[in-house]
Image 1 (spheres, rainbow, N blue to C red):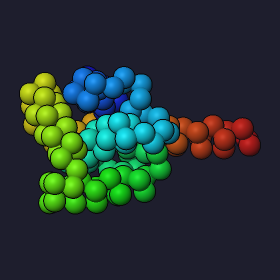
Image 2: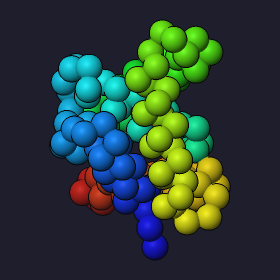
Image 3: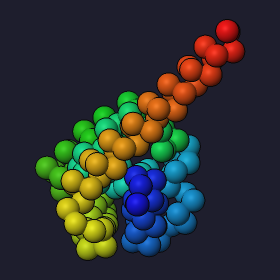
Image 4: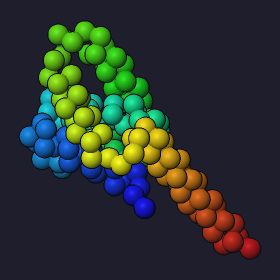
Length: 137
């Protein structure tokens, strides 16, 4: 079964190919224009697919509040296309390539993968709490 992490890696690889940057430069703390552009594209596609900012924070080197800012920037750049045409071109290219490669409806699949990911995190947390309680007995 393909998981959310695999889909994120696929999307990062597509973005890396389109923007001609190393895939390792996308998920870093850096703030170069190329790194920010790549993260904007990847994260906005994932949020368009239904992934929550809190889930993105688990997979990327940024706090969840950054993704609300990314969403706001996406709305601005798509409404005022002349402000950052490079973003719009990259977003459309990456999204179309990703949709052609991903299986089925990418929105539905990403939502399901995100739900499974959240369940796995919750189970890991519960298991941690269980182990802590067992140590006190």
